[in-house]
Amino acid sequence: MKKALEVGCWMVQGLLAVTLLWAGYTKLFTPKEILAGMWSWTAENSTLVVIAGIADMGGGLGIILPSLFRMKPQLVRYAAMGIALLMIAAAVFHVARGEMSEIGINVFVLLLTLFVIWVKKEKSMN
Image (tube, rainbow, N blue to C red):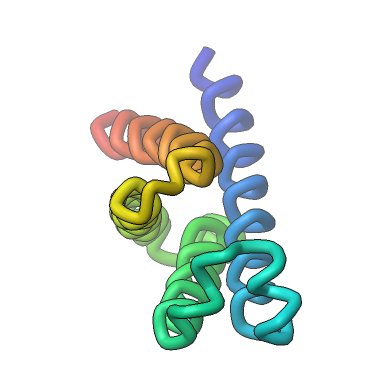
């Protein structure tokens, strides 16, 4: 069971990394007009788009690189906590704007991130 959790955690970390790196890249390098067609909130929040893009890229790198290079693996938990906070903030932002249909991805990423936090906590306790 322990090995299955570790493998599952690696898979989730990989999925989170790809998802966040894609989101960050998209927010930072997609022209404003195209981005506004994808996510309406980006049209009137250009500074927030850049901040969110940088946060997404940082989370995407932080969730995978420490484990991949076997350097300070405890940093994965901290990255996961940051991603969890980012997803909560994003969900609150969308709810405040009346965009309830937009929070599904935030909830999904939050749940995956909580799984990583739990597995890494269990591993550090053993």
